[in-house]
Image 1 (cartoon, rainbow, N blue to C red):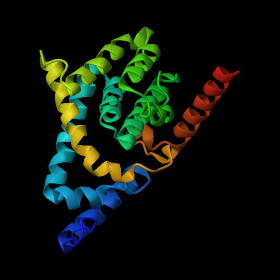
Image 2 (cartoon, helix red, strand yellow; image 1 turned 90 degrees about the vertical axis):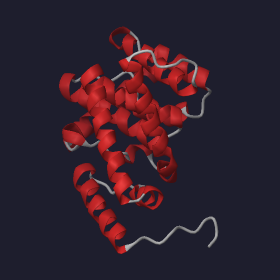
Image 3 (cartoon, one colour; image 1 turned 90 degrees about the horizontal axis):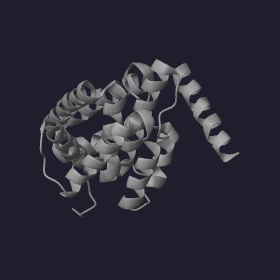
Length: 218
């Protein structure tokens, strides 16, 4: 077997993947492309453990920082690890939730994030400071903190830091499999949850974002 051969899936694993594909199709509207790689890498049981822990961390982030902000933090964790799928998807969720609640656009366009990942860390930190102002100033500090914790520049000092570290570790594991879905059209990324399933909301958000981007150009 060469290094590029994938291990064969068992019948149970194939059945599990079929169920997960069905779940993602119903919940997200598409088949998440890296679920098979998760099962091959970690096995079905560990994959389910990861999912449950991911849900727990997400719930804790949203409870501590707010629903919009919690999803934004996950996006930043994905951004720093190089997970293109997660950085876009969770920023999209954050933006949709905000637009659904307030009819306003979030400070960061999720479709800008692929170009951010081609920049240096210092450039991205400057962009965060530029974008996260006004009501989002606190998020600029959190985004910088999650970066500093990930790089080891600082040690965890309190419960918030512990939660951000858990987020870093969780989304660091993701990259081993989501890297397989690196080459995709960013506009095809799904957004799960109640706002994400509302097609008209997604369309209105996309139209508002395009209009805002066009006005900035002119």
